[in-house]
Length: 338
Image 1 (tube, rainbow, N blue to C red):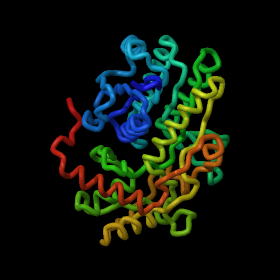
Image 2: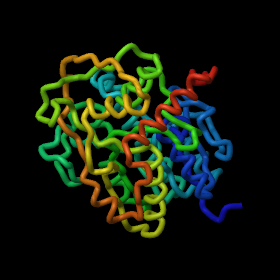
Image 3: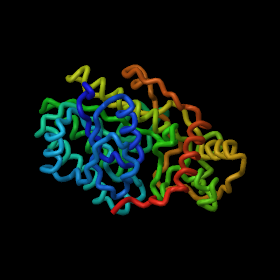
């Protein structure tokens, strides 16, 4: 039996959530996962984690889960994440990301859960005026996805001021890669993440990779992003949880990135090097709302947590993504379970 309290992971059958479950289980935390499996995969959940299929927007259901399992901390990953879809269907995003988060927070307060870690995003900054971007930079989202996440951050701040609960909001930059042991990875069909798209193209699952804009004010004209390995990100969540437990009066908001960027072409070159082949690049127009560069100022997380990224090499990130993509090709149960 672990002497650590039970942690609930919402969206634990998804990409980042499943890696957080791995990190928690590896560190000896008892874990309960709630996921509705609309985009997640039952097989992605570690066998040592309890799994409950359900809707986090159902307050009574979640309050029962939290109470029955004596949950003392929540890691909240469940939500919708496709930026263009959020523009086309904003109400879906305000329901899945904001209204459902409100319901989950209500259940947490009712059940007396003292710690809450929220999966936020660099999209809360919109198109930043400066790069690298700091946590105190202006928050002006340019799409409903970013706004739905920012609204949840604001809710958490208000709730933490009124109730005995503290929180950490982690603003992710571009998450990539897969578990080094090959236990989980990015499995969603039709994903839009560049490294995922590129390794699919390298394995013949796509005919080409679109390069959206080559006229940005960057060294090679293509967009520059801060790519963070998903296992390093998961490790940051466990350390953030420990920080919240150590100081119940503290609330944290921190960027999660490496503080340096790679352009689209640099990423594709890295994939070419790892695979020893050339991916076809197809130049296309800019996408609306894409900033030229989005790089984290990560000094706060480095100063606040004992977090030392272990997989910051771009070639390693690509290698792990490629290995997972090959493994995924062998699966017969790719589709989320009904």
